[in-house]
Length: 193
Image 1 (spheres, rainbow, N blue to C red):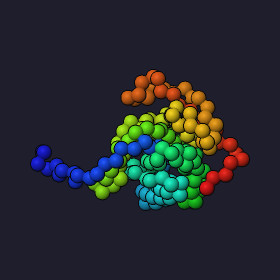
Image 2: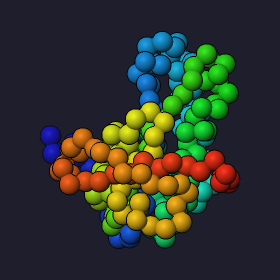
Image 3: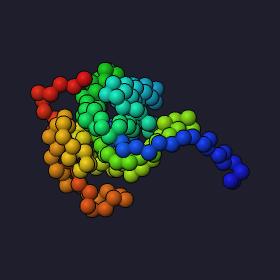
């Protein structure tokens, strides 16, 4: 079996302090069951494309998308832009014209974490490895539909687009009971990009 594995090409890696944003579509399995496959595929393609473009507008780099979830990276100094992208993803998903045409309403949930990661190319794709990647995923999973959860490090930073409000969490797999998360209440008077 080991003979079938190809070695990954050696690429230069970079350790950096980064903000990771995970946005996940709520109810995609229900959509897959209720829509014809070609309509579902078109809807997922439009959803991912809109998030990729939104992340890039906010200065982020999309690392990957996993069907109905998108992972983006910002340098830690640009955490506020990553948070804006996460918050804006709710509105963008809700306004997808194709979803409306198909009689569907879309909701997302989002998780944002900051910490050290190693970045580099794997299989020609930009990738990041480190606890913030996993933490952003766990926060996203713990968020209720329509919610953006941020880690304690993000909540402690000033200049965020929204008011961090402490939120109790269920135990996050691999992170223990000491994790703290904050939901962001977005002020209606602020404007997005």
